[in-house]
Length: 425
Image 1 (cartoon, helix red, strand yellow):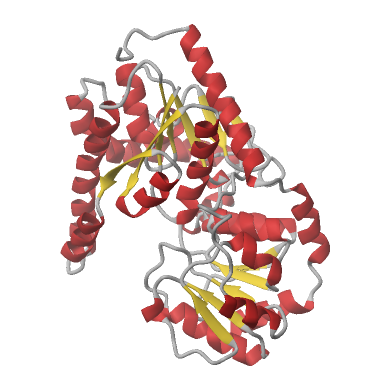
Image 2 (image 1 turned 45 degrees about the horizontal axis):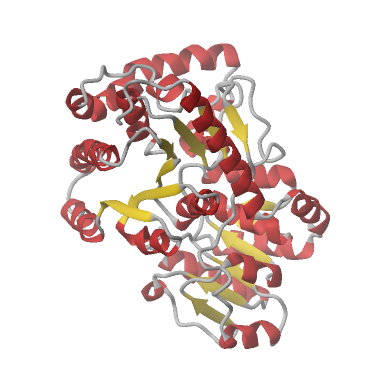
């Protein structure tokens, strides 16, 4: 089998797909990893053929070119770039497709894999990193901009969603897909996010049923495999001697991380430092944006990157953005979380962590008083029973990666028994 895996975004988006790819490689399959330039080295270190559809300089050039644009102009420029990238990515992956191929794609890159599936008949699996990646009308995910929708009765939500999809969502995606569909000689899809872009064969939910009971209106082809937690070369990365000395010198610290894709985080860390000082607590600041940090006292240390599986069991609380990978690592470590969501699935993940009793959310990252109060709650309220219960439900990442690989092999075998003549020889 030749597994063509697409992945883009933060470490939390990339690592699960690296883990699944490593499991497939260990089973003797070929893995081609299509990602952005900054993740090529990690993919190649795993033994994959790695290809980039977006270079680092290209990304920076786009950011610089749009900095001075207004909102409307910036959106138009972004749409043009995305429309071009969809076809470039289709060409890149299409050059590797043959009759042994299977496509595996996460959100954002669903459209590329679905176009290739329709063009060549190549089997395709969607991956859901978080429950919010698959919309439900019966149990809507918690997006900040759509909270009002949760208050509406289902009988109102359903026709409203279909109206919005028909009037706004479909025209937007059809505009993005038009050029690629024409070049691939495919019809433009309808009902893009509700019916089209997910795999018609299998949707892999990379989380557990206890984290999200599948809503009644989710497609029947969803299979939940658990969190495929993965750290590149985790056996080679150890905590530094400086950090070991810091951890051994006092009480377990509070760990703060705004996420690997967050580059403007000075206000977050300014607030964090003041909250730590008000509480008399020690802290560890994790960020690659070292220039965004305030001057740190001896009670706070900075690290560019650390494997959370090694650090979090020795921490008291994790303060983070609510990305699903970081959320899962905190649950595996059995520590409480303060989630400060910013966009996308982060609000929904925060809601689920609160329901499990493993943490609380804070939506204003620069409110010193609120951050201090919520951290005090987490430190003074015993959440260990809830955290321990969830911790016992977690399984090591390789188990979830193995379950995902089992499903991928199953879909490939089923496709081989019913070959599609469109697949390239």
